[in-house]
Length: 74
Length: 135
Image (cartoon, rainbow over all chains, first blue to last red; front, side, top):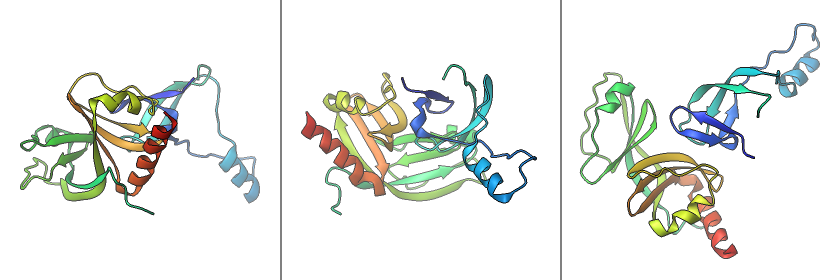
């Protein structure tokens, strides 16, 4: 099964063409620089439910798109 | 690294401007327009002169693409290398990954013109060739 994201310009395209654009936001309780770096690099939010996300369509129009995605379905 | 055999470097004109201004541009005789994004247009071949109704438009020669023509009979082979569905209407532009490489495509009744960043042309040619060897 291929996760597809709908680009408003190019149409539905597989996720491999896209780059995820979540802005890392380490929680305030992490104060050590190394801890914050690890959180920033690896701890994506990935909350359950419908999310509004930013994705960059690197393999197509090369534009940032705002996409609504239900993380419980894909 | 050898130069790709099938793909040839092409000239084009790249126009970045207000989407409404790009809507008013017509293709040159025998040429094509490829809308890369709402505000980004590729004109093939490069026209002698282009009028854009946007004072802030960027109009620049584009020499970064290589292109190759594939006959209609080769479309199933190309479709098998793509995880997205090719358009059915003709003519039609499209863009996305082909064999894992970002391409622009201009579908016509007789086949498709595939444009690929020139630096990746030999990779695409190699991948298309390796598929031939598998068949």
